[in-house]
Length: 500
Image (cartoon, rainbow, N blue to C red; front, side):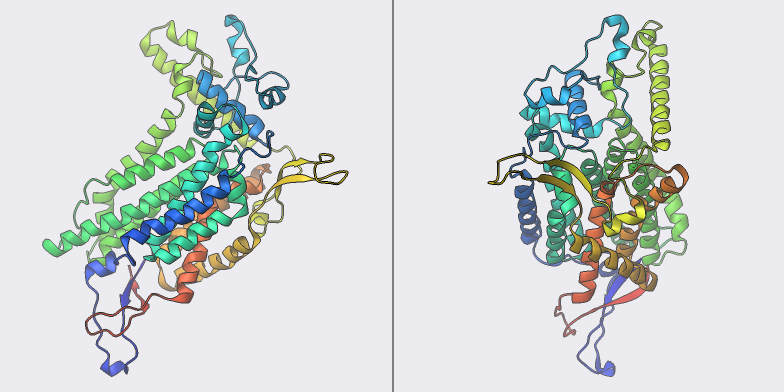
């Protein structure tokens, strides 16, 4: 990881008055711009994104692509706490305003009405929340996707500002995400991937804040205490705990969130070791293992597990869930209830895992991971060819899930630049972006090769914020830092300091 020091220029080298940055400046560089604009700018960009996403949100007035699963499952969770089997032609009934779409089963055959689903329930709970507020309508089941899409723009703008110390670059990041076509479509469709993206981004943002807070504490110790080989315990770290909860929530939307959880947990610990080394501790990795790792296990292992399990509360408390075995569990006492519930739940997880690893059915819009960065196979979410609605005999209307080419192709170049930048300087920001992108992209190559799994372009949803961050960081390198004046320094520029 690289910190930046400042060097005067505009004078001959022999006459330069070079100010050596303090430990605080190296570990926690000051934030650029005003606090007010640091919030107003991102909020304005998020408001633009929100308008684009909420404007005519109920169009098309149809069940789009995989909304046929998640709109109904979200409604079922709100009504029953578990997913239930819908009747034939349930989509038509739902669009017509009829929510009486569930199969009816006698108490002795209740298992026949339980729906076998292969994704965890949190994303569907979030869709159902919108249906609870606004009804089982296109607006209702798309409301929360649009909301979290808009909030993700704000989060990205803020985290980009923190990483670059530039409000301008932070707002640029938010604007790029607001204008990306795939993010736009997913924000207006009741699919799970927008929620996976949201929780992954939120977890990453919490870890970036935790990095600053931990370094502030380390610098305070360095300035006021005698040095030791391993350094201090950095104390209670609520932002890392929040990150663990967010990443557990990501796993509770789709299991692919686990790749980000593992990658980010390792990344956060490496940041801790880098901070200890940056203040001159002799054994920074020993300090990280002794001081930081024990608490990190609670925040990045236990907390995600608890968050994931809590997402299944509806299944645990209901007798109507798939594979629940409620009557057998309750008839043998409370201890057996807990034991059998856990056993049944784990068996359910294993069945879902078997489904995912064996998913090989072909689809017209499936694509391979290597095709995703180049947008070679978009996904048609919806298509209709109505008559006499546009002054012609026939018209076509379509919703196409595809990224904005100028953003995606620029991101490819920017990611290559991040590789070069990280190799040259070990800058933590380039490393974080590359790690996040790798965590969300490379595992799919294994599934493509080993399992021949059916995959789609929109699986890249959690990569979108990190593609944008790569562009913004590359833009920051091109335009350079803002000049400033200080005692004995006419102007400043960034230059890589020693690896930290």
